[in-house]
Amino acid sequence: MSERLVAVAYETPAAPAVPPANAVAMGDVRYVVLLPGAGGFSAQPGPDVMCAVEYVVRDRQGKIVREDKAPPLMDYDGFRPALRAAFLGMTAGEIRRVWIYERGTVAEIFDVYMASVWRTGKQ
Image (cartoon, rainbow, N blue to C red; front, side, top):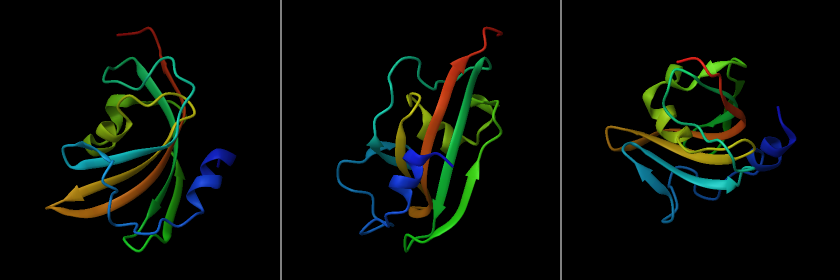
């Protein structure tokens, strides 16, 4: 797991199940940028957009319940819809805290690190 993600993820948020007032809303997803990325190409829909992400999943009390790395060549369109919304616009090096709602309640909390994002050139 990247050192950048570890530095952020192992600090338990004060009120983990409640997104802060400044969280960006996208449908059933809320997020805040914890560390900005390097800029440049950003995650976006398309069969030729590839993302390498690492993430930590928390329960509603903020306890880490899973750490994971996505497959190294995961295409953006291959992620489930809520994660695509959370990843939209992320650049390499960016870390976001993401709250995913189901039926009006926070169901999942992720700390996501976009290790890299690129276009393959095939469409």
